Image (tube, rainbow, N blue to C red; front, side):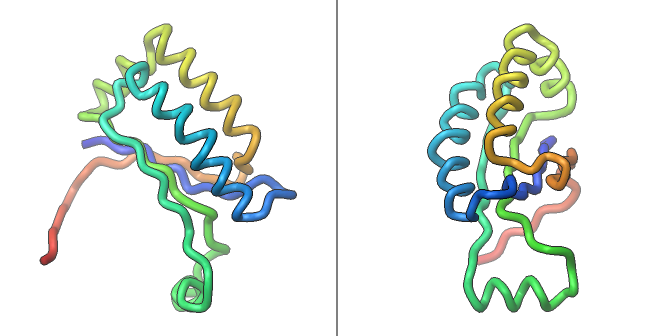
Length: 124
């Protein structure tokens, strides 16, 4: 599997709650409507938790400021991604998603990268 991982930070002036609400209620349905154009297998939003336990885990490793969430999109492989995003429909969907991202994501501080499944383990 190929995944696109997008570590999201909200635009200045938005609270985390406003950011996550917009992402869930507006951007998520928009992505759902574009899944076919992208030939994507799966899309998930992982919203950052808040509170003392979340703060403690974030500080425990001395890492950077946390993200407001992570978006993950799955494709069968790189060929599916390249083919789908290279079609007229795929490019139009990409432009539509990007235009909407400008409404709520601080793109300059939100890294995006591709990954391939290298190891998997399942628990009880």
